[in-house]
Image: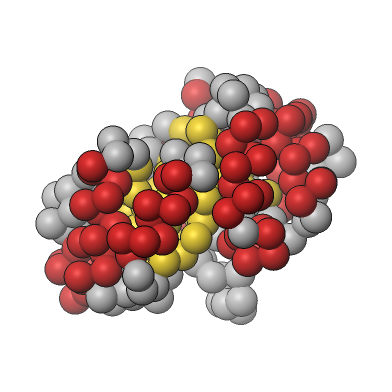
Length: 208
């Protein structure tokens, strides 16, 4: 199980400082969508150069022009890129093809995606599928229950990540049941008093 730490809604300068602190401490550092929109591809390059010991996921949330966006994202240094599961199957296929060609990883974000659509996406068997609870949603959810149900509904899907308000207790429960490949954590780490110590706590929880 890997830990992915999301850096979002900060200046590029602060993002680089955080990336330097997180480098080698976590498996994956995420360049959040806000940073992509605020600073673009050159910021991907800067973070990629900073992260010498951790992988870089760039949350570009592709919805269209899949081939172009994925080629650019990998070109500037992304190790993993995201495409929205709500995009057309053809767009996702284009992203998937580029990821395989470049020997890189692709994450399909299942935010608000129906089970019927997921059935169409199972063909992308090397992709990481991400169960994602929107930050804007007001309803509560149980991460462990959601993943367990997903595993029952889609046992064929091999690689799974989860995102959306994950705290240390939830991470421990997910790790205990070995339900996901990647747990994605944002503010529980980045907005804590000591982010590096928080990473250590999460890593201990999911690796033990």
